[in-house]
Image (tube, rainbow, N blue to C red; front, top):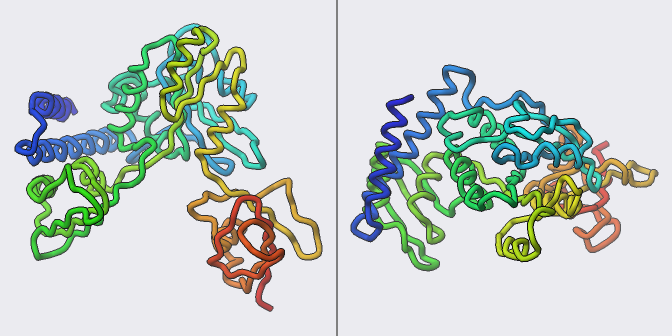
Length: 370
């Protein structure tokens, strides 16, 4: 592991000394590809000795979704968990009070949200310092990450935590790169630039240099956006997770109004005071918005809809078929049609098929084949 760390440090030093221009773009792309491979080897090599790949804390996923709180020690994560869920997580005036993952559940708008209080990470967590690997491995399984920051500490802590998460393959508030990549057996490298606009960051030489680092000699690469060399590396690696992230600035009761107004310029942020219970409702509202969930109510034949216990689905997969599979995998085999009341249909009720896309708070009645 020390050899890999030395190689990583050497490449990072060379990258910092290399000027960024068109002449060095291919060389920098090659260095970034080497760095990504070494980081992957570091993660896989360490977990092979101590447990299965990506081994995190042994916390059973419960509820409809999972939200993880990540941050440096003593920023108020445990206090937030206590106030939001009523679950006890030890709070003290010293650092590293929480040594394992503490789960809690919030019932919000009919959905059960599992909230995880993860132990504080330190700089260098992605390289194995502290319990950083376990913390970040668990963070990869979350639907939303809340980075808790101390309003009294420098805002550079935000970038440090982002750097640690990105080093472990977590991309915050980003979409997967719009790149079509297909490996093949022959034909060489075929590179197609972005036809819809400019291609600023990638050229054929850079693409070939990056692919050669992965020993790929034959592939089709097509850009659908102005993507960077790091985007191409992410697509080739294929192990990246794209997670929405909220920056919860805690302890705002200890700063001035002028300092608070400066924080308003930060994107994806929510100011809170866990101790004084300020704006906790605002934090929950923001978490709900970033989760982007759809609540579907069931209606048995001849009965009123069940508004107490909705079926909660992610908006990216909320068809009638997804709804049936959430209830029971066997329902779709005998599915005939569904009656839907709500915003997704023109008539109340309306008969729809399994491919119909549902909207939030629709009411659905399943009709089976006789």
